[in-house]
Image (tube, rainbow, N blue to C red; front, side, top):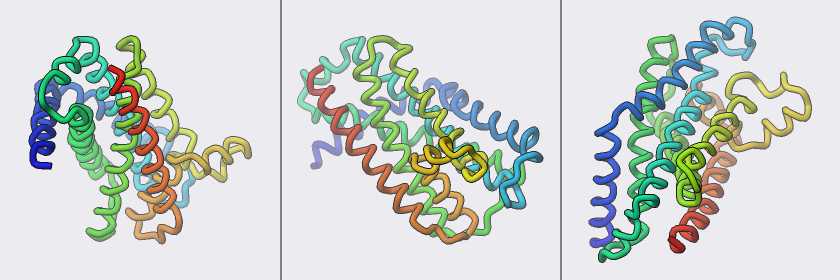
Length: 250
């Protein structure tokens, strides 16, 4: 375990250096969600009825998920470059735990997406977001966002390891970014046509958004938090299994 943690620390440090040497990646990731937040609050917000006093309070959870979905695209991009340049072969020739190479990218994704989330929260506060919830609820929100980040990052690992081109490595993230738009992130699902509503109410983003929204507004969380956790765990386990299977063949 000591050697594994040492190897993991080295791989994490390597990936973090890539991030902090090109901070424009984090800036790029935050620009689009903030733009969506400005657009929906100040342009569409007056026409959308959500039953909340501040539309920014309703909107914020979905914006945070979009930011995370945008950020994980860089994980698949960096993994693809490592594969293309033969970095994995070099690591495999060294006496290190092989899985730490992938976990280094996953943990780096956690760090970079945490920075993006904090920046977006600060902008939301400037725009009028307010929450009177306690520290435990905030920890719950952080936990759900963390699980969501890990789940999507392992999906990104699968994409990066199996992609045939740079464009293919990051293109998958567009479909994930689109999911919050067909959920309760921007409008209540009961305003949607029946077919769309059925899909929206039974996909993972809606449960995750509702759980975060209820935590931030001091509302009963109901079953949403458990459904959100199950979705995140299921996606993580399945994606992790596929990622390790592909990685062993490289």
